[in-house]
Length: 300
Ligand code: GUN
Image (cartoon, rainbow, N blue to C red):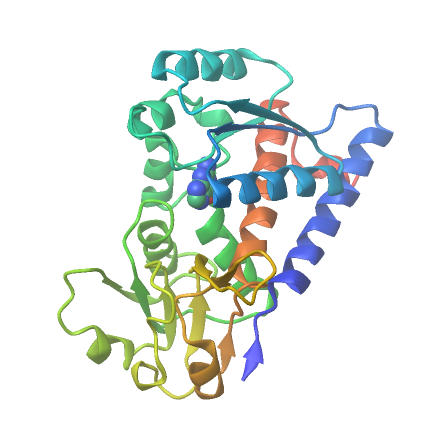
């Protein structure tokens, strides 16, 4: 068993982005700017957004955190998005999900300009992804692809079983892994809450992506010897012995599964860190596209 180390892989990607930002600064260009909107006081959302902002700073990016109380109206949120869409010095916009129940996620996602949609959630960007020419790939699936690339794990001709069909993870990673592209060309099975023969399918999998949000769901008896196991779960599980009163648990029972795998992601320290590296990569790409620049600028 070998560890797919998200810290190691994400640091390499972040370092490359930092060098690019330095090149931009030396040429007196502005740096990429990510604007994040956070509504209310959801614990995990606060943690994720704080991490996104911190990582922007580490890569030399500008960032803005725009916070609102839970009582914010949908209209006011749409108005704030319109301002950011128009702002010439904002390259990427993200609205942290989940939203309060009175705000339509659909309307909010659709309101973000596709050129600044660094989450890749807008229907235009989902359409490009489905067509096989993605512009912004959602951060978690993109992070998984970057992880496979970093460790040079081929997916071509492999059977990948995805557990979960969300718009944020399961659906887009199933499209990417089955597409005719690097780190694609796999045969993909998508499992979900109505799948009746889950174990039968996971036992056939060369690659498993677990993205269902049920701690410890994947057990050793569900895994083929030598499988690659990617755990997207990040559930807070109460634990009085932990400093914060909870521990982060993945969807995979790591302790019993790890020895059967060829590669496995830990939680924490796996996919979570890669999603941030992917978001920063999308923000750099949004910056380049909006400014009519290409990667050539970095080799000039
Ligand atoms: N909530 C959980 N994951 C994500 C994500 O990737 N982007 C946003 N905006 N919200 C999330």
